[in-house]
Image (cartoon, rainbow, N blue to C red; front, side, top):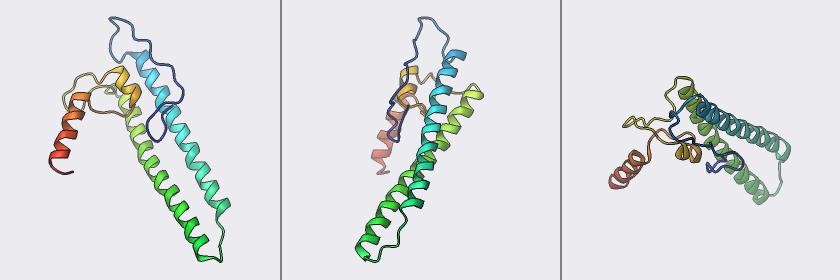
Length: 142
């Protein structure tokens, strides 16, 4: 499944059949499974971070030890915040599947594509619209 960098560690690519209807029930089930597994893994990481922070919280007498621990905790919390935002995107993608709106570009309405969605299951733009958005962002300094 995807991790923080949206790379999959274990999933079977969808076997695309020539002439098959795009985003049919089997494809929706495929992506629902990917998204739910990804969400489950992220939630486990959140739980492990909470346990780690609770177990490792030590009041060091040495200021440099205390600063190192605070920096480590700060980094973990920033990572978890990114994952929290990712979980929100996963939930939105699951809602789009339920509404039969998943897999279509928000900007132009065309099919995003099975392989692109497998690479980035929370994608809401086709590759052309995403590329155009990135070019515009670079031009405006965003």
